[in-house]
Image 1 (cartoon, one colour):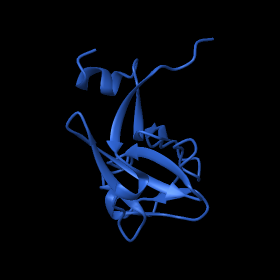
Image 2: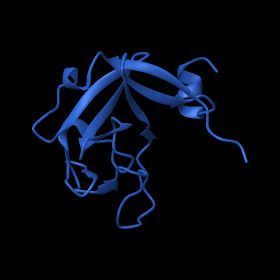
Image 3: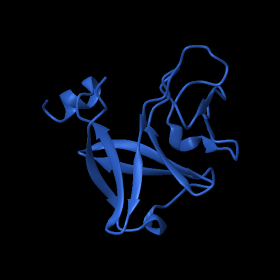
Image 4: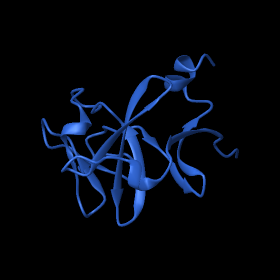
Length: 122
């Protein structure tokens, strides 16, 4: 079994530099692609900008204290730990790991990812 390999992108100098909406979601850009970040209990989560159900902007949603992000259109809830919708309807939000390091905040993109592979010319 192989472990995933990530390419890490610096998204902020410090966690305090990430501006969050009233719904506790921030927007970052990686190689020209908009992504969202959210924070629950001190942990950061990176996820797709668009809802996999109807394509709504997750920036207009909100993060709950139970580690879920809620789509603004149909109120579909996704677990921020694994990206799956909490009702088991089969929708999954693409997730990206985030690391807060001494030199900044970094978001990881899986090197073998088909979605980002095309974006990054792989």
